[in-house]
Amino acid sequence: MTKKTFDFMVSRGIKKVDAIYYNRKLVHILAGGVIALFVPFFPNPIFPLISGVILAIFTYYSHKKDQMLYWFQNSKDLNDVSFCLMWGFTVFILWTLTGNPWISIIPISFMAFGDGITGIVRNAMFKKRTKHPLGNLYMFGICAPLGFIFAQLSTISGMIIWAVIAATVASIIERYEFGPIDDNILITLSSSFVIYGGFLFNTITI
View 1 (cartoon, rainbow, N blue to C red):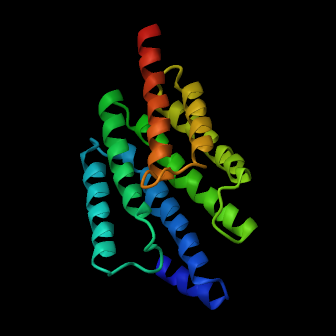
View 2 (view 1 turned 30 degrees about the horizontal axis):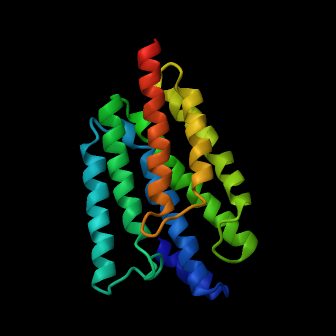
View 3 (view 1 turned 90 degrees about the horizontal axis):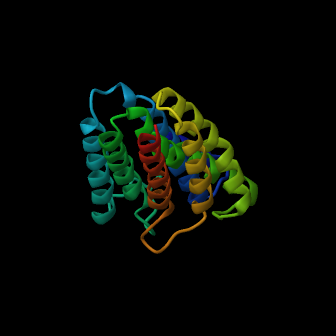
């Protein structure tokens, strides 16, 4: 489907590099975000983990063998690979540690929906890939409600405030990248630490 959107955007005069970027964010939202909504209905986190690893291997292979999926992959980075890995491992680790699938999808929803929509908005406004802080405000506007909803669905007392704090942290840290440590890694790691810290705090104090 995203190959068709790439062809459509290019036919409308959008530069290829921008079409690739828009498409990558669409993949974030559709393959990462929408699919994440079905994760809590699986019996355990094994299948999401395996799916993430398989997709990571597939995308990495296409990079290394010069068989890139040109409509959304960028030869300058492996961010699509890190996205798949963080998606699978975040769900597996948080679900295993907390025993709650709804908690496990909070960080990946920030990465998929939050970062995805933020990237589209920034590119549309500034006509280039940028980390303008206005995008972080948009990201918080997406992540905070998502965190609230999923924390409420988890039925774990006190988790809503921690989910909103995690949304704040993720929205701030999205601006940064450190070499191979991209925003996919930083968003999921930082929000996972906050979420799990909140889970432990609630467990101790209740």
